[in-house]
Amino acid sequence: MGWDLEKPQMVVSGWVAGTWGASRVENPGQAPVFFLKLPDWHKEISYDPRGRFFIYSKPADDNFEYQLYRNDINSKTVTLLTDGKSKNRYPIFSNSGNLLAFACNHRDQKDTEIYVMDPLEPKNSRMIAKPEGENWAVFDWSPDDRRVILSDWRSPDESYLWVLDIETGRKTLLTPPTGREKTFNGSYAYFQKDGQGIYFVTDRDSEFRRLTALDFATGHYDFLTDHLKWDVDEFGLSPDRKVLAFVSNEDGIGRLHLMDTATHKEIPVPEMPAGVVSGLMWHKRLPYLGFEFSSTRFPSDAFSVNLETGKLERWTKAYNPIKTDAFRETELIRWKSFDGRMISGFLYRPPESFTGKRPVIIDIHGGLTRQFRPDYRGEDNYFIHALGIARIYPNIRGTAGYGKTFMKLDDQFLRVDSIKDIGALLDWIAKQPDLDANRVLVVGDSSGGYVALSVAAMYPSRISAVISYIAPTNLATFIKRNSENEPDGFRREFGDERDPRVRKFMEKTSPVNRADKIEKPCFLIIGGKDFMTSAAETERIAAVLKKRGVPVWYLLAGDEAHGFRNIWTYNYTFNAEALFIKKYLIGATI
Image (tube, rainbow, N blue to C red):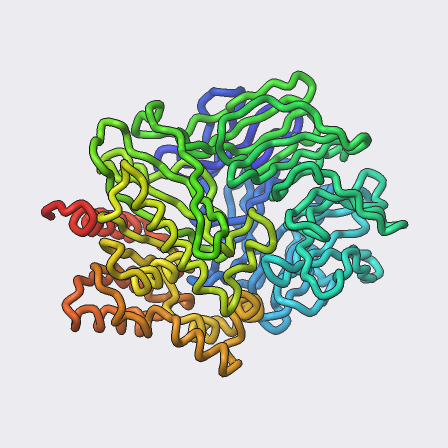
């Protein structure tokens, strides 16, 4: 979460004695010293530059109405900073630490406004921008704290950057549209040292998202990572604005890089195993870059690189009740889909002690464009290492990280093509000597659950069972239910359900209307307070399957929304999934 103001000591978050909280780590490898309890389900946590408190966002209800809170370290008191009703996101401190900028939809519960406040005097917050659009954010403050960089996010493949003068309210577009093609202009942006330009990531004139320097005076774009034919998905600028740290997404593997801002030459970094690097965090005064790293063999831990010595150090070692040293490294696999396009994913194999052809779970990620990354798999390891099931995590078309053309390949009328990618994966499994094509279960969460149910309907004889977790079952009704929650972004991805031709396609391909095609056991899991899903539609699927004699399990968590928060509900669901998988994939008696 941050560093001590003066010392090379980390401030981290994690579980300590059953409590989620903030801890200090005085030296690499030492046990964290707990000092403050943090709330469950917080997001976007920021450490006060003066070390007095934390700022975080937390939902006020079950459907993403986030509020901002201040958690004082010494008094341990929590103060609500926002109105308790509107959606508040993306808090970011000024360089001085005196002000906090954030986004809020107070005006009409749709369009975003930009506010600044003194977090110690929240009643004096003031609006500095009233742009039109659903998803605006402040990315950075200028070195003199007089201007901010604004992001106007439209969709996963379209966003724009502006610079806003806080006192005058004047807003200047920095990244104008480039003809008819949509352009993504980053999830991060920082002012350059002189304040006369910015660093950001863009896919302008490129398949991939490149780290870029933009000069305000000339409008010139200097593409700093053109030599990498992969996305840059995160970067951070050192406090003196002399060094850029960035992470390239190379086939899902996160690789750390350092670059001198004066010469644009890379600085050598220590070698690291394959895994995922994230959460870049510079020390304010000392030459340390902190970050999180996760691999097949351990959960996310805190690491650092010393820029002066080049030394890589591991600060934390997350508690793990099982030994993971013998876990096999994940394998990057590729297969050819129906149209000749290569699709990739990651295969986690069980221990070699399990002999014979192994049953397979295909686990499809949610989050629409969210990419599966080869990290530690948590409770999934139970199925891999205790039950001997091979688990494949595909990155089907529509996933980010493989170029903007690939990410658009499942948009609107092309959505069925992503289902065919799983069909091609079933072909690949059938050719593997150690995988059992006759024992394949497909599981997915959210949009991945939609895909899983669609696979069950399209390839009913080629799978053994399906699990759908918090999945929409009809995209047309999904958008209608979320008409107050950024519907335009969903329409750009799925199509406009108000268009009769699009509506007809959505209805024809929706799992709720194709339940009669599903032949294998099905487990449907949803939350009763989830706007993303429909209990009525899910129960219709269950009724159709039951009538046809297809085994169906249905779990409705009445008090849960989109993602189960209560630990008891979560554990109950996991154990129910384990029973289902044992019965219908392994054939065990339960």
